[in-house]
Length: 143
Image 1 (tube, rainbow, N blue to C red):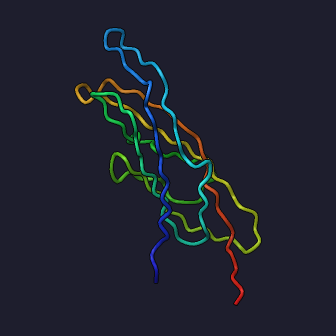
Image 2 (image 1 turned 90 degrees about the horizontal axis):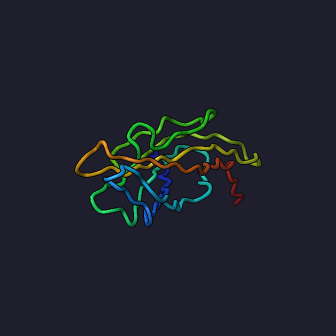
Image 3 (image 1 turned 90 degrees about the vertical axis):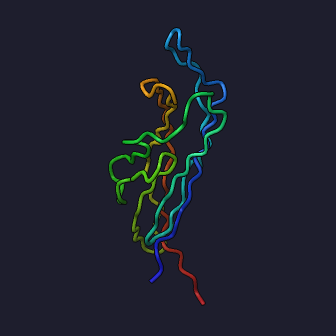
């Protein structure tokens, strides 16, 4: 029996223009997220894998998914609770079962990423972004 279908989602976060002033302990700027607005997922067993690809990370800081809420689905999500195998990856499983001809279903979720100082982990800042997962119906192939 084949394993789950791996559905990769690249989460590109560009921190250009984001900075931290240690004298005032203030952050300025906001990152730019480049994430598909929705992720099509077919019926059957799937593993959705979000891969953080940070760009222009300020010197002395590390970018990562938030440890406890890097990926959070809104109520109604029918898949498994997202888990974090490492600082730049989150995964969630599902086993969608939809009949041919069904309308797609959409599941909203939030991506939470942060910058944390390499020298002082108390210096951290988080940002959020909200795309969707789209559950597509079974596609029937006639022979």
